[in-house]
Image 1 (cartoon, helix red, strand yellow):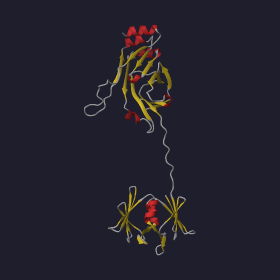
Image 2: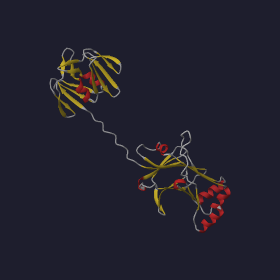
Image 3: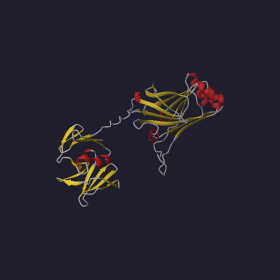
Length: 314
């Protein structure tokens, strides 16, 4: 049959075309009984004598999913001279596995692994899947030696089918993908809080807000005290009043601060720390030492003596 096909192909100045079976039939199971995915493959094995028959024509292997491998006469001559015969295997690669080779923002369209017992310049074509613009598609190649290539294919039209065509020298894993846009990391913003001792006005990142009680200085220890809820929540933390224990809990991500009214011991993530001025309740609001709370929440604190102001940045 191969000799007859070669004779007919030579008369038409065309390569011999061999079509491999599809990966799966309509009713084939997708997984084994224990849930493992089933991988099917197209396989072609040609003897030395059969390779000799193809040397005058060339060979086009049409694999599963429409993949086409064109072996030119020069390559077939080299294979014939090596006396190794010719073997091709094509496996499907699931999208989840293929995605591990790409950036998170790229989209896998299809992926295959092609194994051969030869190497040399070969034309490889993948049909463009329906619904995709071929101009947006690229091909990522991961070779068995670990090297990689990112190829922009040529778009060719054969009949009424568009293909992505590349020229390669060795076979490995081929991933047709749509390149996405790398997400732009958010710009880090610094929140700045400016409080003035004895004043209700406070500026947060340039916007003026009004407190219902003003910050003040405990002159005995020289510490600025501020209303806990405002400063904590403005820095992005959550505040909870524990009435039964007369305590305040501040939660910022995985960090937790637990203060007790009138006590100079504080629990920070379960560890006891000492502060030099205890939280107090004044004018219906809980006041805490500004520097300790701010710095524990990862903020920087600056005292501006000339304006009697405190600047907190995070």
